[in-house]
Length: 119
Image (spheres, rainbow, N blue to C red):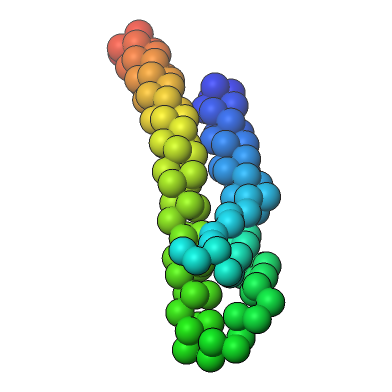
């Protein structure tokens, strides 16, 4: 049983590390014209917006379009980075699952042996 508890503690640590990493990240995006810069936090909330001087003279629709383009680019950057992290996370979980399965099989074999000896 101590093996399983240790593995569960390790799994918990992996999950906490992933959450901490997510919270610490930020992702930047810029519109194609280079007039709007945005920053998203690890939960994809807007935490920064810079609009080039004079851009507002182009009208609300144009500014909105450029902000949305910058937001889309920031999210695309986030998903590119997140994809690598997700792969690492999934690899760690798969390794943990294999270890837990080996431990369970070992414990089951021990229990079966004890049961046969008890007969």
